[in-house]
Length: 434
Image 1: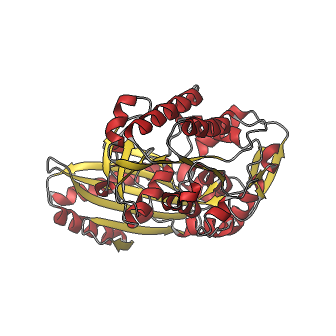
Image 2: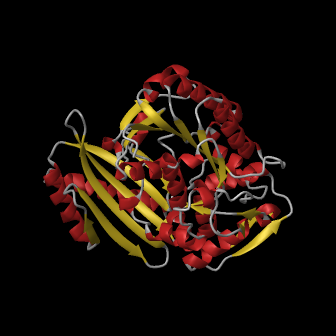
Image 3: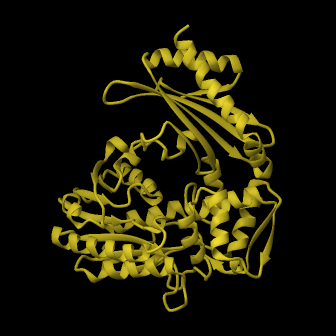
């Protein structure tokens, strides 16, 4: 096992959020490079890693991050920047490759996109491939993996499938949903990334990776619906403007418009493995099919398993979509101990006769409510101290909609939901002073 530090770039991203716990469980020490370190504060592994603020677009910040590191993961993309992101991706890769060479890094592991570079492909996929080319031009050996649709809770591509299929009884889409894909489970992505650490046969090579089956994009949505117990059909339209599809996805799913625009454009061509060398070089990776991976993602639909991306200390009130949930988060400063908060919250929960889950830490409580047709709802309270010993009481509502009734329940009654949540928080705070 490598004894030295491993650097993970793109630490606030989805892949890194799954990779870092696996590295820690395997006994590695991890250093994270992040442009906004505060966005990592809510992660379960936050206190187990070293965090260095930095940006590949600012080369002067890279030397500190790379000091003492033998292997680095390059997991950065700039799709959220919108127009001009491809130039930034190439410049960032160039800066990183040069800095890694100066620092004496022995190995870079990169995750890119699966597409045929000899065909006409979208700018997003072309950028992913050219980023790998830039990294390989340096003197540091690079292991590049190319993957398409990633199946797992929190994956951009899976969340698009999840939310669009849940929402629409008849799912509209462009004709190229008939294109082929070779989806791969997030577990297998991490398997490959970790295996590359100790397998010297992968250094300096490019590997196309996918799951055990090839399917049309539309079939992935219909199979998700079947697993979820939803009756769904597809209607394919001859032409739908890319901007219009991206706008709809940005409105109805957790995927922001700039990322949706880039990602949807990348679906306009087949994304399948043509060179399956990874199966020979990494035989320890046992591939998981789409159905099994989707079922696992749905089994893990719990507030206790969600990456707390909203815990950045920036705003007291947030509403977002994340990992299959619609989430409403609020917080308030209090002047009493966590034990007193715990007792007050339990008193309030008892009045509502909710099913209650109490976590191992005494200051975290999860109340669970089942909405029979609409979906499932949890309300979580936490009492967390900051560096100035101020206690923050947080209330986070998680709602997992089941099909169209779930979305109608949430959005048609949205003002009532917000009023109810605020009154609940107010009721708990009043218990402190009575």
